[in-house]
Length: 416
View 1 (spheres, rainbow, N blue to C red):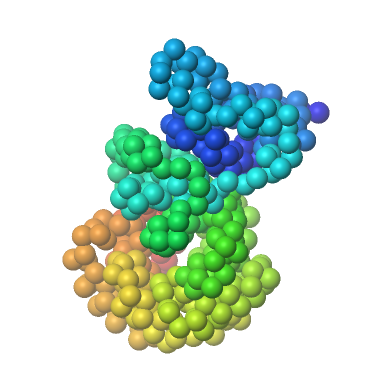
View 2 (view 1 turned 180 degrees about the horizontal axis):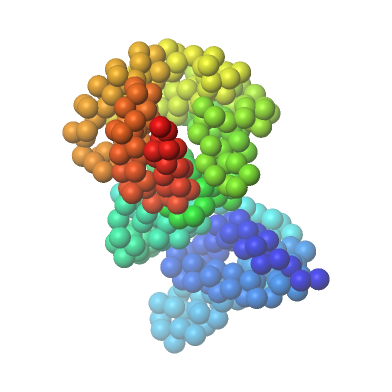
């Protein structure tokens, strides 16, 4: 029976980071390992059409290791390649892998790969880009869109990051305690970005990419099991669960975007909400409050409201105020302006937006125009709302968001 290509592509995207981690652990040449993985994925896409193997992850690892072994042997005449074969690819590991030992095939190296990508030799921006590429499975173009830079610029950044990790002599092992703590902040931020890109795709026709958000949640669960007392890890997992709980209600039958205040809350995942609330309650009780705990607390207030009219906006406004003191983030300030409008009225909210216009980080950002349009509509300025809905539509890279924003402008234009 022929296997659907979409099913194969989904499985390959899910397995690619795990297989890359396994390969880098054996052959610490990041670029070469990525090339080998791409060849293995291409082979799988062609051969699995007639049937997916019983152990697809093991199949990919075997093919990729063969590609790496062939590459090393082809360069065996050069001394440093000879040394690489001896030091990085012991024959007993290759024989064990070729024999298909179950313990080797089932090992998940994703978390080790995540910490390798967050090596201290890298700048935070380079670490995030490399991890999104290697662990998150995003293409260079997708990462470039998320960072609002040309694809060629992002490709150079990722290439330099790989070279930096290689030059630093990084090994594929969990870092020592002091290094581990130093990398943890970057690791948490990377997981958050991967989840966000999956939950609300920054560009293109898709509104969500469940494979990315699910992978981020899986890795965060692994990190939480490793660090059960780390409040920010617990807060991040809570935030992901409380946000993902609304995913089924975010789109209509035609795939159109449905904003939070119009969602059918009976479609929200109550099990995820309950788990998220338990986690954020536990995290906040630890005393050291961080930004992810506060974001999770805000999400919990939304999720626990039976309907939009019963949302505790004063509490949300207070939480955003606390978050803004901890984190100088323009999006937090923008969200606080929305909460301020919900408590004090749209005109007061619009006044708050005026102060944000001077922030260069929000210059020409579509969300500023989208919020302004929403508040102008609530304030009764129909023409102003139409103008800013259209401006926001022009400035977003997400097709789903653009359709939604243009629909709002068209709706207001039809009103007599």
